[in-house]
Amino acid sequence: MEGLTQQRPRQLETPANLRVHHLHDAIDDDLTLVRSGIFASQPWLHPKFFYDARGSALFDAITETPEYYPTRTEAAIFTRHVDDMLARAESRKVLVEPGSGSCEKALTLLQDHRLTHYAPIEISREYLVDCCVKLARHRPDLAVDAICGDFVRCNVLPDTVPEEGRLIFFPGSTIGNFDPEHARSLLENFHSLAGTSGGYLLIGTDLPKGRKILEAAYNDSQGFTARFNRNILDHLNTRLDCEFVPEDYQHKAFYNDALGRIEMHLLCQKDTQVRIGQEYTCLSAGQSIHTENSYKYRPEAFRELAVTAGFTPVDCWTDDNSWFAVHLLKAA
Image 1: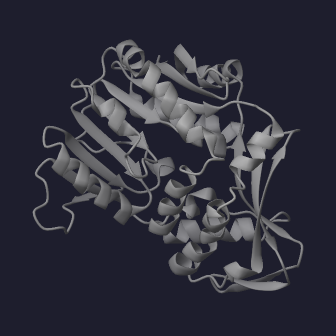
Image 2: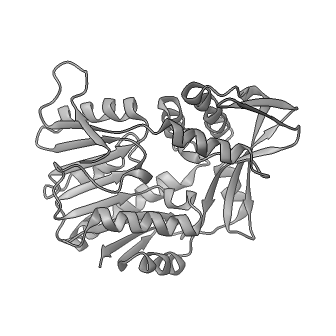
Image 3: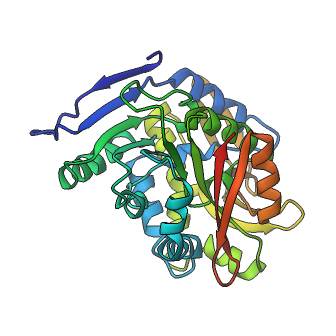
């Protein structure tokens, strides 16, 4: 498969039911991406750079905070409706999870005996391998293909992942991190991964709600979100040898009502120099780096978006407060 290599993880006694695949690194592409963002009139960084091992662990901590409602609200929806969801995805055999993180969310679905194959895709490589080794040892009956790399760049799955009966699993409202145009492109990519041989997409979306609830979720009192936001700078220092000083930036998150999204920024506290490749630039005190958006979709608006990407809506489940939605879509 072009752009993808397979190797066994280095751990001793690797489970026989685990294969590890590595998407080739694209350091030059990432450097170009960072350069285009930092030199923009409104500096920005791609949120995929949040996720090294430390960033992944910090995000897991965020999901446990009392302010961050999406994870527990979505989990409650699955607890109540998972049997119905799986029944509606009637040809299911393979669970594919882009941006899988710890693989924890997939466990509820993987209890279904008809799902015999799991293919998580995660940019935080060591983190994914560690999680998949544990899962494969715990579930020797489950075939696991761990795909290490950026799921946005993964438009073809390894040959070892069966083509029929794929259920793409994209929980957590991650689709909201993409502006509507790029969200549609990502959905089109998921449509290709699902295929038309009984393929489905099960996806979570956050719903619009009061500003106070939204802003609290991205400004937790324990400061995990602030550390997660600043960790993007540490990660880029390590990966691309940038010279960010994370302590010079303050976490800022707010709801942009006009665009229907939460915005996360890193606000410069003083004039600070940054190195990108062989170039230097100076960010001024009071200037911000835009690190993430989180769009909130009404169910009907998201269904319309999914249809433009080639999907047919099957069903939608929400919680009692209408804070979150889980959509099942079929690859038409």
